[in-house]
Structure formats: C-alpha cells, structure tokens
Length: 183
Image (cartoon, rainbow, N blue to C red; front, side, top):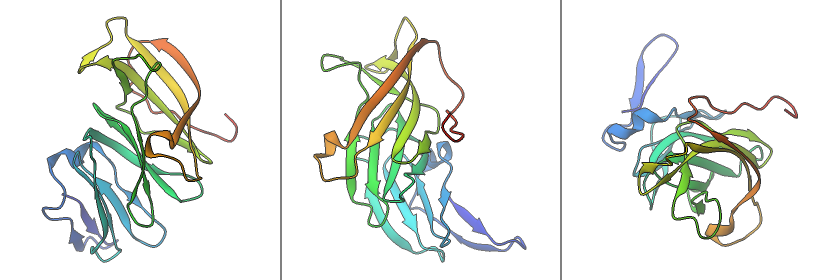
C-alpha cells in the first residue's frame, strides 16, 4: 500500500488495493508535479497528485520491481526487476515502450536480473545484474555491470534497449550503481 502524507502528517491518500504486497520492493518516484509512480510485480501505476489513477499498465512478464527510474529526457520510465525483464514505459501514458531480458548472447538460456536500482545518465541506464537460469543463480557467480541505452526513436519493443557495454565480475551485488557527472 502506498500512502501519501503532507508535511503536517495528515494522510492525503493511499493506493488502496491497486498495488499488491510485492510493492514493498520498490521505492516510488514523486515527480515535480506531485504525481507518483509506484509498482508491484503485476502493474505499474502513475497516480495524480490527488491520488487518482493517471494510468496503469501491466507487467507482462512479471518480476519483482526494483525502484523505477526516469530517463533524463523524462520520456521513459525504466523498471529493472528481480526474476524478470527490463521494462520501459512511456512516462506520459504508461504504454509499454520496451521489454528485454539482459542476456550474454543470443544462445544464453538465462538472463541477468537485479536487486538494485538502476542509475541514469541521459537515456543510458546502468544496472547491476546477476546471471541466473530458470531461477537458479549462476554457479560461477557471474554478474554484470551493464550500460544500457534506451533508444528514443521508434523501434520494436525488444529492440528498445541496446547494451552499450558490460563489465563482468564474480559475486553478488547488494549496491546500486551511482552516476556522478561523467563517472
């Protein structure tokens, strides 16, 4: 349940039954206009500043959401998930704009998922993920820090994300990547 309070502690509104118990894994985004974007493992919702639903979109492949982020141009909401894909939604309408599973290559039977919030610089997101196949973590502990571009022009849903580069390492990550200037 998402609950919104004013500075004096007065409860203004709540999400009620719109979000399920898996919303706990994801911090909501509060935008400058007071609207709020929150999600669970089935849906992502943009609420108006007064608590009305501006838009609501399903997560077609599920996944436990890890704190959504906006691209710098504000056009896309990007949602990385645990045990699911990377999603992009049009921030103004909630339309599904992209979906992909981060893979080592075309023949990879698994994918990289995350328990970390992506970092953003421009229309590039940085995400740390650990490789798993059928829900089983990679026995070698393979993980990635990947720079993924969100392509702003019209492309197919599965081509909206393009891996610019990746750095492989061994072991889990409990920390979200951080962007400071060009670093």
